[in-house]
Figure (cartoon, rainbow, N blue to C red):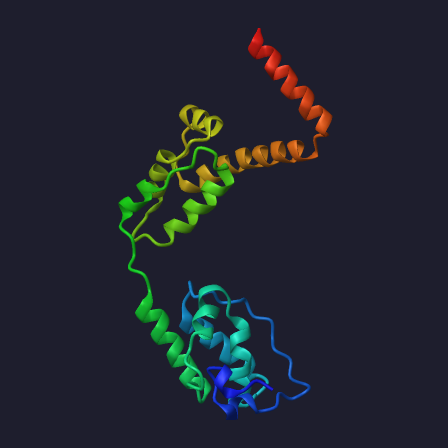
Length: 208
């Protein structure tokens, strides 16, 4: 049995037995980036159907956490949590009080595709960063995305037929991402002798 000194929960919570028929519903893991109040409401509503004891709520809640939220829980002082309301309040204080300030719109201009970064990686990183920016409307996202783009094929395509919305941009980018993925797959399955021949051919062309 885990001692109370090894856990944020007091001994009474840890020692409460979990009913053998109790099954924790499958909930999307919470990493601390979304609304914590929404998490708590969903958790209490879902488990409320089973009418579990408060101690069972405490036992179950950490299993819904991951990433930064999980790390926060593990760093709570030992034997500091008596009940689920106290745990909920601690989570809200930590996340609401510790949320990072929103970034200004011009921050998006600092996001550039790396020299060797794949298009898929750049799209994913750019999309994630826009969530941290205040009032990044569609035109701003479109302009800053193009400004940081280095994929030559896509850049050339955009020059011929520029998209009018970010959605159109991402549809175009998807075709080039799929092409990149296909090339990577071919290289991964290429036999060693084929790679050696290709290198020999390249060196021969350089000598010529």
